Length: 508
Image (cartoon, rainbow, N blue to C red; front, side, top):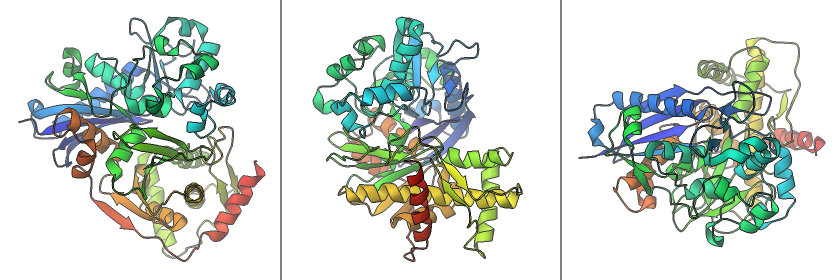
């Protein structure tokens, strides 16, 4: 009996895989690192075949770590960052740049399309309004406009453009179907307005995008079956051809599927890793800068979901570590967290005198300004580990204050927010959930396993496997256990928040 599914989550620097049973218990896991090319500051590229190879390695590790037979695996689901994969008409990789080491995939955080995003936003189309009033350079249409403007030779021979999750389902099954999740969130596709906004594409000088990118007329729902594993993909993954392939998701949306209870609209998902995404179910428009959506059917059929967040959170903490000439490894983050935890037991004012604005890679929300930059105020010539930990902790406080600002803007718009369900690498530092609770006034719920995106892809795979036709029911049945962090009512961060807003105002 096929009682297991495989889930794959491709993040910024690694591909992860997990084997889940019908109850949502993860039976095995695997991980493989990704080779990220950074040709210039603010840019990033991957080679998609290397990403696929990392996915195969992670899946094989995960399956080997279990006692289940590959014949017992019913389906596989994929989620990934919103990176943009380029292929020619024969399906072969297309180099993004003319450098010898160029990849064929623009990383999600790549901001080389900032000018194109600003120009497209100025068109004033409803597509822009649905995406916070300003299209982000992290979305796919500005990236494709950049490609057409700056790499016309590549544009001329373009045959396919995929969101990374859709590339993975294509690579697995041979079917170039696209997910309603990826297209709604990152491509301007509008389920409730007939699909592709042809008038906007015409105005944006992308009238042939749908054809050039190999797009279907209609996207398919999350968890729908794209097909079965191809013979080649089954061999590469170490699975069988009798394994269904579920339509893919953007990673944060997969995390939201795993974290959110459809019956509790006051609860938002807080997916906090390299960047941070805040997401929730809600049907009404949110007319706030940098708040994207709502996107109908982008996760659950019949429900809309919105997204906001911070472009650089975990990566900002990485940057603080590298400023002290150290490598931001997982062990280094854990070592710093342990030191901070020890010091804070006796010194609650640890790090005071250092103030940080965390917009190191722009401000996604609520300023919607990709050109915004961060600041560290109060640095000295001290380069000791102790001083690194002071700066790192104040960076954590800055992230909590930026989150407070987001939540306050949502509440002003009429959104009820009383709890945040958190996942991602930030929960490894157990001070952070409490800090976020204290800053926002929300109860923070933390699952037993940090990677909610992986669980979300397992839920989608379960639907493709036929375990249930109801994705919402599966999201509840396969949910993780949650631990609550109640906010401290002492408001000890008020002075820090006033300082945060004052520093932020200098850059406006």
